[in-house]
Image 1 (cartoon, rainbow, N blue to C red):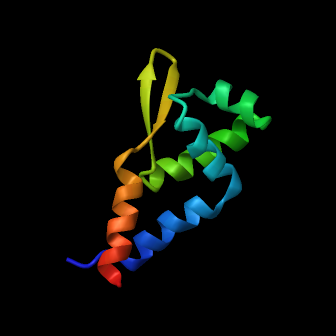
Image 2 (image 1 turned 180 degrees about the vertical axis):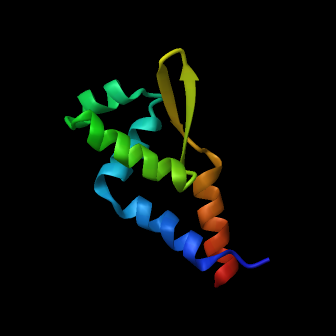
Length: 90
């Protein structure tokens, strides 16, 4: 089954945005909530939430509710999926 080119393109588009890539790099050091991301990235909460929403829709980030706080992590299968889908297209 060939990967959907539009879906693959969206995934790479998300990785090309500096803020979104920065968020994903922070997840390499461990899970984060929005407040921690805002502090580290020096961005306002609405901006960080917007980028997290895009990353979640692109299935690059997962969020788990812990009370009123959402803890975000990178979806570890996402980079492998992007790479394998790209390889399948070549």
